[in-house]
Length: 464
Image 1 (cartoon, rainbow, N blue to C red):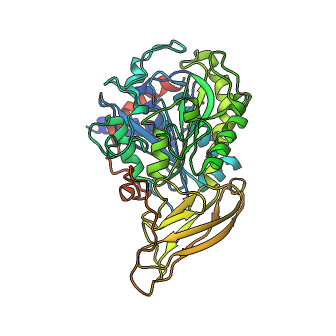
Image 2: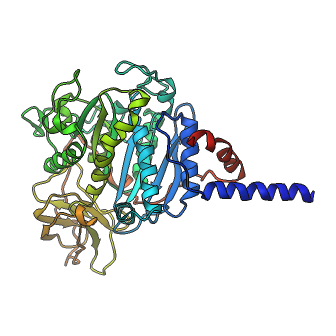
Image 3: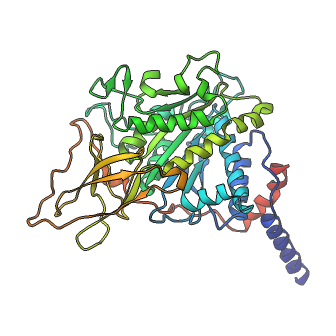
């Protein structure tokens, strides 16, 4: 019995040494879903102070949708720290994105471990969420053809990037964001957006080399300008797309893929490229006040393995620079007449009438990504006077912080809700369901000896 106990203790000590030892660089290859899971578990165990691993749901076939969170407080939101996310492999046969995000994780944690200033400043100022695959079932079904491989859809044969609620569908066709007819992967992402107040996001695809920005769809209304479907924040979206394209080795040239049309500066309005109903980036922007762009990161949907190191170098600077843009504009809290932060205060910027108005979250926080300039804000909250203030907004990314400004409201002489903006007649904003604020997932954490043993068994095969 004593021998058995000693062996078990020795095994646990060896496992702890394995987990705490610096890992070898992540190999450039296509890790399958099981290997990816093992790698994420290993990173979380090796860097518990700056990472948090949780699942936001499951695929049709029951595979976990793993998200790794990185930052100085990875398990919870911190007031003043913006939430950023990257999502990849939404189409199962577009696979470079998941490789890039795994390499990005490796790059971030190694930089932090080695006290690299760029990594420390980014992780100390930003809470970063990475979902390497939104469609693990599609990845399992994918083959390696460059353009026409199977695996795009989920296990039910549905294109996940056509399955989100659409702001332009009209009242009769528009379904509520939590509609049970939506695919489980889509519902998992929608549920995730309800638990975090994301500010900026990108969705990685393949098959072209371009940064595409909202809107992806239109119903022929005032948003349609010169063949593009233009958002109220079009200047910001163009800037964000250019940040990625010009930090990429060749995307900004706009003509890298021989089978694709040229794109000026390597960017495009989504609708102007082709109309796309039910897309994820429009949903993020309209209903979750998160500015998201779609990054097409490779001409080939399933690039040959030997090209992966070069493709990582092509995208590395762009991935980092884009994350830093979460510090554009202004951030702060809305406080009532007693100085208490309030939820659901409407925070509008003059000249930017959003389909669903931006509101403060459960912490009373608001974030508005804006280019440098002077902006007039109008803040509305029931029982308080409408507040109007003009702010001079500097360029925040280089300082890793947006301008911080709290709006202090005054109680109205008579109860009034103020002239709160109303969305268009065909849109149900349901904003309260999407503003529960930044918190950790309530799903159980996968830990314990069984997971540790599985991790130890698979680690050497994964990293060598």
